[in-house]
Image 1 (spheres, rainbow, N blue to C red):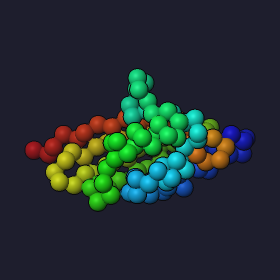
Image 2: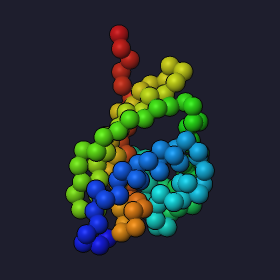
Image 3: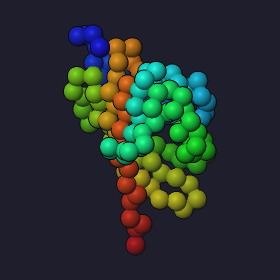
Image 4: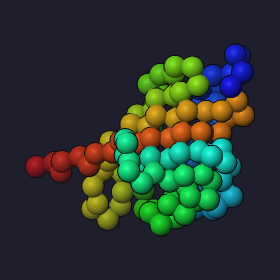
Length: 127
């Protein structure tokens, strides 16, 4: 990461590309988001994170969502150096739970993620 580049320089474009990859489930769209040696943790300190672009693609496609099954909104909570903190809400169709998300994304100097960790929690149904 160069001194001039920071997570703030990359996050908006990266989030747009992430959502496009989430919609397409296209391996090349997914690959373009991550460095060759990236680590994708589907929960903090995951004992079996997805490693490298091929591992991330394999894990992503195994757990994929269909394009019409979800909507996602997000906001940037902040950045520290090469790391961005994103809060999101994923709403699934068909009566499935809604999820609150916290993502921690660390970027390399080219705007690809070298590390991604997500926390997600199902919201309790309204009574």
